[in-house]
Length: 322
Image (cartoon, rainbow, N blue to C red; front, side, top):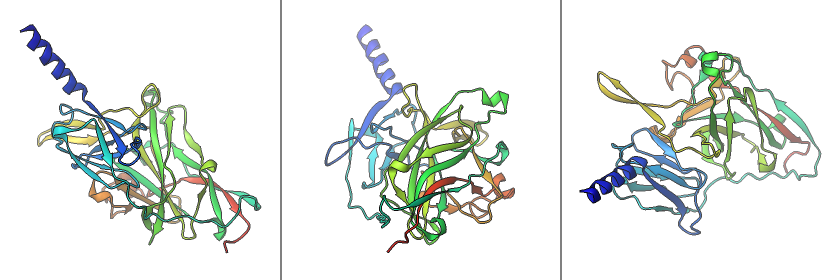
């Protein structure tokens, strides 16, 4: 009896804690960081920087299939009934656009700035969730070869609200870059993803240095997106936590995606619409312009706060591309 009791406790603990899976490149067997893991039901999660994620049948009892995707790899479907310790993703031939800039580094340039727009109104702020990605269009400065030196990200840490502002948090975000395809975010550009963390000590404007990434804006512009990956643990790595809440309603259990801090202030002061959004685990990842066609009941849209006022500083070269 004692043996079987201990065996039951072990198996129960293993199920509750979950199984840790590592996602690797099928060719070089290196871990693939921050892989998108969709549950196929409008929800999902991300692997950490070491390509690892934890899956528990107790925590995700209604999930029977995982859909894994990462830039530069073929998407893969895996059944949760028999998850292996390692999952291999197959690299695919890159069809991504290449950004070619003819302005040499030694040529003269001037530093220019596109001012960010921020505020402290929580009711005019976007609630970031792991299912959402917000993209903003940047164009070349006066049509000249332009490098993005810094991103100026408006944020609202709610520090002015005592009941909300005292809590500590550290949220990991990812910046990604997309081509401008007929006014919408198109294919991902071949720049590496930029991953960083923000906490309650940052407020109003977060400055992200991109000089070492050599991000050049193509002739027809570039979309820069901001996406939540989740909270950071004590070691500063992506925490493997449940990314949604289950709420009991008269119609049964309803799953609501967890919102993360800081909030993203949206504005109604910009002259043109330049903000697009999409849900990573829903609607086939389709980008939508943030207006009434996206959600007419949205308070942000009803109050005309339809743009995320992301700013930037640029290195603008004097020589026009040849």
